[in-house]
Every structure is written in structure tokens, then in C-alpha cells.
Image (cartoon, rainbow, N blue to C red; front, side, top):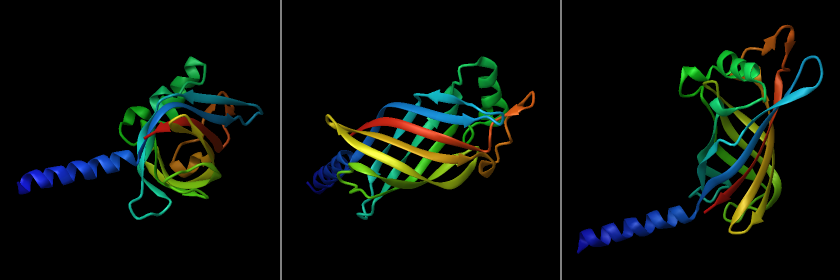
Length: 186
């Protein structure tokens, strides 16, 4: 009887945590890369995954993480994709290099139980094996049974030990802008 009650209590606790977990659905990630000679190009992917759970402490922070598969970034030009992935992001080095991960996400101006509206966020971004704090703007809107999240933030490439992207004298400036839009459901 005691073991049945313990199993039942664990099942209820697990179900309660799952109800507070937001899972990523459809996503669009754009990295806007300004060029040293003027203009810019986008590196795009839809390969965003992960889930977050409102912190048990009641703080505006979320447990969990969001990850982008950097091997899927597409600039629209094959040679540029190859250089981006192999020479600069070095995705073939494996874990820590093949994904960009945002964790310890702290929303400002929102209730973690019902986030909606405009605000800001801070989180730990791990790229190229280096973890740094990033901050940016976020907009959360209710859509059906879930939420639609749009966020943007700058990334300074030298902060992540990514060497300056250059090819035939043309390069990417040190700071790129990440823009992401994704849906989440409980």
C-alpha cells in the first residue's frame, strides 16, 4: 500500500511539472550578419528545440534550455555555408560547437505562469564552447492554446572566440543580431 501511494505521489508531481513545461514548436531563427563593406546577409534555420519550466522558487527565471542546431544554418550560398560551419563555428568539433544554447532564461516584465506582452530577457548563451550572458527584447503573445515568442539580441563574435569571418577581403562585422520567433505549448 505504501509503495502504491509513493508511486501515485510521484506520478502526480511529475504531471504537475509537465503542465508547467513550455515546449518549443515551429521556429524561425535569423542571424543577421552585417558585412564590412556594407550590406548584410542572413543565416537562417528552423532547427530550434528545447523546453523551459517556470522556476519552482517563483522567480521570473526558467529552468531548461533552448538550442539551435548550428549545422543547419543556411545563408543561401553553399560556399558561404561551408565557411560558416567549418571555418568559423567549427561545428565538426562536436558538442558545444554544433549547437547554440540559451539557458537560465530570466524574463523581466512578465509573470512566469502567464507570460504575455513586451519585456526583456537575460540568459546564458553557449556558442563555440564559450558561455556568456546575453540580454535582449522579447514579445510574447497568446496564440490558441500556446504562445508565440519573438526575441532579438546582439552577439559579439570575439566574445565567443569565433575568429573574424573573412573571405577575399570581405568580412562580417564583430556584432551580429539574432532574431528568433517560435511557438511554445504546455
